Figure (spheres, rainbow, N blue to C red):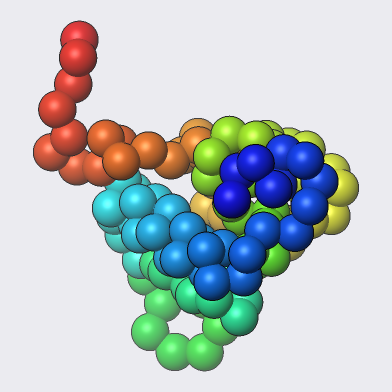
Amino acid sequence: MTRALDAGEAPPADALRVAVRYLLGLLAAAVPGRAVEVRVPPVAAVQCVPGPRHTRGTPPNVVETDPVTWFRLATGRLTWAEAVRAGAVQASGPRADLAPHLPVSAGSGPGASSSH
């Protein structure tokens, strides 16, 4: 999948869906909370980031992007600033800046062991 994206080709759809769900799960585990909803339609959405949570309607802090952009952000192939500048990410709300939490990694969640 990374080879396809790095070569400017479309990745296999099934592999992209699995990767997007996995990477969203890593984000939710690394930054638990319900203050921000991250949407990657039509694949998945998660809530993350500590803070006030919403209970009805559209949450006040929303991030939305497409699957390829999310994969690139979550794996460090694209920075948050680049994605926002290019209009590839729509982010609304005071807590919707995910830059401090990207890229995500399997060892970045709560309870992850540290090599320090």
